[in-house]
Length: 225
Image (cartoon, rainbow, N blue to C red; front, side):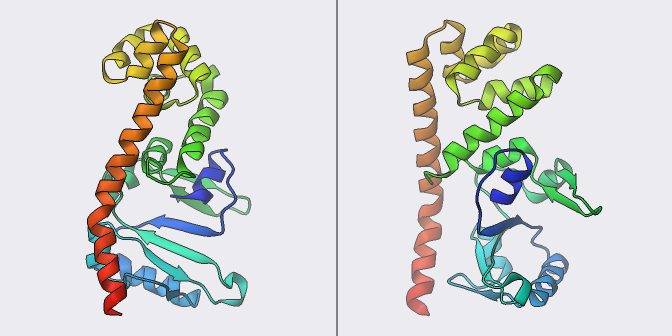
């Protein structure tokens, strides 16, 4: 669900770790622990590896010590702000077949984009590139679902303007819920930029507020340790 998934979707990102969204059931976490044991992975920082912390939305951080993955970091989460619970994410997942026949499952592109709407500076350029890659790669094979996705998620003003002009009927339907689309319909570049900036600010603030109690709990755990 992180940088490795972004690479598969064509928005390359250098990443030193792997982020996973998992089903936080006892049986599944037992399987996960078995995989972590094979990697000689240990918990680093806080919180500890416990389903209660996963259910609250915390990330559990691991460092691998297996010779073939030495120092590689793995982050595990089961709940993401603004994203559906795991069963729905699993139903919408994208499966990639790699050379050699191995299959990797990632968040669907819309879910990956939603997960990137955080307060972290590095996530917003990646979010933009993910949607740009989708638009550039699939505009010749546009589907209703893709058009809706582009109109609600494009953050590149010129591409949003192009999308609105290509698909005016769908743009009119999207306009009431997205000021940036309304600005593109009337061809106001300055208003598009302003609307996109306001969107980002609202999402950053929502993410900050979401993490306030979680960060407070992490501080208590650090002091207790």
